[in-house]
Amino acid sequence: MNVAEAVGRALCAAGVGQVFGVVGSGNFHVTNAMVAAGARFVAARHEGGAATMADAYARTSGTVAVVSVHQGPGLTNAMTGIAEAAKSRTPLVVLAAEVTEPRSNFHVDQEALAHAVGAVSVRVTSAESAVEQACAAVRLAVQERRTVLLNLPLPVQALDVPDGALAQAAPPPERAAVEPDADGVRALADLLGRSRRPVFVAGRGARGPGSREALEALAERYGALLATSAVAHGLFHGNPWSLGISGGFASPLAAELIQGADLIVGWGCALNMWTMRHGRLIGADATVVQVDDEPSALGAHRPVHLGVTGDVRLTAREVVEASVGGEREGYRTPEVGAALTARLRRRDVPHEDTSTRERIDPRTLSAALDDILPAERVLGVDSGNFMGYPSAYLSVPDEKGFCFTQAFQSIGLGLATTIGAALAQRDRLPVAALGDGGALMSAVELDTVRRLGLPMVVVVYDDEAYGAEVHHFGPEGHPLDTVRFPPTDIAAIGRGYGFEAVTVRTRADLKAVADWVAGPRSTPLLVDAKVAADRGSWWLEEAFRGH
Image (tube, rainbow, N blue to C red; front, top):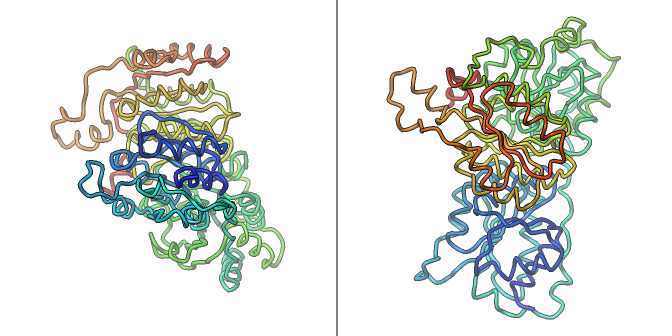
């Protein structure tokens, strides 16, 4: 058995079951070895799409995934998706062939590329150590929540491994939950005991098993309201005291209640400028607490009055145990409960419908789609002016129903995001929400959707522009020719890839979507929604404060 085959089999023995990629000469044998060992391989049409599919799959499934790429250009094509995964601390292994001859056309400093975007780089250096080094890459990804580039040099791939080398391959132990700091637990319990209007904001670190239940129990004990960052959207779905997303996508009522809090506790949440609207969601007299299992995260984005190192689930449980006295009403007053029932959802906020015969208001479109599409869905959202509409208007059943690859803020990742999430949640309807810019940038992966037989709905919010730039620079009188484009029949592009497709200009046109939902859904559906572009989205002003 040569190194290429041994590495592929070792990765599968270490727990990898899903691989995405584009196969070239350098990663041909190792990828085939993974398939032979039982892994499912999905061929993307571009390495950038493959990397984002793997990222989304890992986030949504909770398991490590692999993206397999050719040496040199295969890796550089994938770098934007790798940067997104690395910034999001997604447990992911990037398996890349590597040339070691500097005169080769394929030669680049692959280790430097990984470090430049925050990934960790390791290398298979010999036949004797190949299996252990492959398993170490998986172990590093899982236990340290890192995106790991596993370089597989071409000269090493052909070497024979020692007999019995695979015997040492095994899945790594799960990441150990960090026991909370006892003094921090007591201090947080004391702050909660003195608080009258507490709000919990749960982030990526609160998506683990049992975290929702632990946080809900603690929140009920002290009368806290529950919110999430965007990446944890859906975590508290169905809880009557949930505020939904905190930050730019928040409804007016949610923002008002968070601003009124006298204690804000971030649970596995960075409390960054997006989640806290550049600090404007934090009242002048509010106490801010952050709980995270990595000490370096505490206070990284803003000063906090108390930082508690510990696993979210364990910390919440121990705070309950440290509490004295009975349950408190806190922020859960009858008045707040009635307001949440009546006007929490953004779609319940009245708006002037700007739809015409040619273009539909994106708010009207999004609310209608929320009614038409099945509730059991997994939603992937691209980046752009439009992105707040699907994020705020389309409900999701839980935190695994929303995949938000926005740490790098690149457009063009939404379609691949939804493919990866769909493969991890096969019992749900996948919905991709894209702008026309991101849709056209990633249209090649429509082929992947059709080839996989995914019953996906791709909704394109088509304003024939890079809308964020139009609404940011247009009011200042700058020329916009560089960010506006002629009309494109995106529905026709979808049909070319084998989709059913409909162009939506009015609410009546959405009957075709309802008919598709009611039908066999044997072919994916693309909705080319010609949206009104008379104004920027409500969250855009918030976003550009950080630029």
